[in-house]
Length: 292
Image (cartoon, rainbow, N blue to C red; front, side):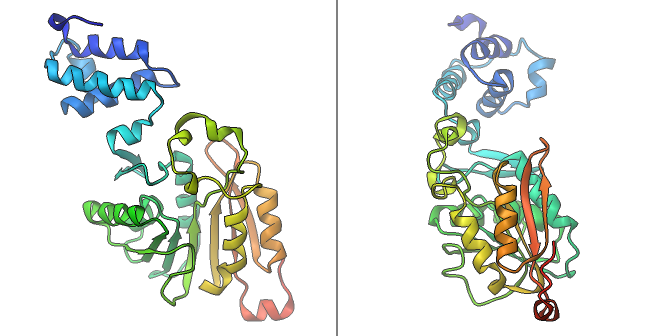
């Protein structure tokens, strides 16, 4: 442990880096020290000799101890950036992941009406809905989640960021107001119940209801694919995130249930990460046109 007489930013950071495991111990340490001191991370490099108070050092090492135990940085800070938006997070929601930004990019690439109606299912922090609202202010965006705490968190993020969206409590489509949309978008649970990844990293601390979807990880995706067309205008789209190895299975589900223009896209790591499909127009349905 460092002495009281040397409570400099660099000394604290060096000690923390020695304790923290993982891919980015220096980044983790800087984020925690920035949170405690209110200083920007660049200041730690510009003025490494800057002193901190004994109370700040105690707070910092208490957070470092929690990080060493595995607690996600986002939960310790109460915040996670997504699409350059600072989102409040809590243990009641999944921590937004960078790869989910690919889902936002895919939605923005679609040809939709200028005032498109959009529903983000299982919104959690509101990340996807708020990212879309920041890019398409004329869209009418609704977000839903079955967890009351998540609904309140998404509403709070909407207010804080001044990005108006409507957030409702609903288990998928069960409690939604009667409406039809141009786009349904979701990052649903898709991890198989016995997947070894559930015992690793941040997911150990995240709610299992936001992660696990039956023995094959496809229970919730099946429901969304089977019921989605009932909630879409003709020509509307359903866009789903899924596991890196589930692309073929999800395409098959869409094809089995009469969707067309089925396409899987990759994430930043080159993995199949999301699949989208379109509800046929009535004349296409009459012709049986379900080609991809």
